[in-house]
Length: 196
Image (cartoon, rainbow, N blue to C red):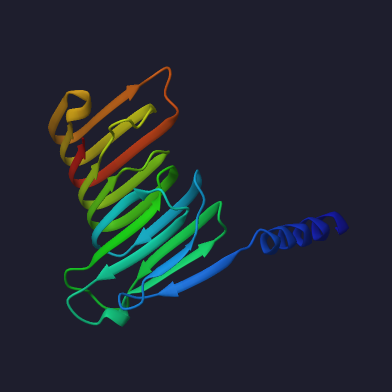
């Protein structure tokens, strides 16, 4: 029993020593926090249009615009410079919500949103992107992927970077590369995937 408590205490000390922090904002108050290159980032967002862009800075910057009630959209980032979690929430339905997320060029992303559109550009790293309905666009140029897996239950998979164009029910595309470094997995239940 003492080992369990010692392990729990060590975990708490490591989290506080590693600089676990939380930053909160809204559409009127963008947020910025340290996030180093090659960090892991988990993003959960309410429906909207999300643009994720790679930059040379070792920070995450998040801003948004909405037609009304800018304070109703909460931007909450928590984590350390090596691992972060971003949650975009709102108690009300937001009209024309646009979220801009800037991350280090080399960031491992995991993204989930119920419905909307997500675009990822200029980000090298593992990507796991999931939507129930909408469109995913990923710029894969120079992505150095070990594996690419794209699938839709109903819709289109357009992977011009790999010469693939499929539409209909339960469409998927998988490709493996021997000398790649990263994994790309994208899935939409109903909608469209673009790999450029």
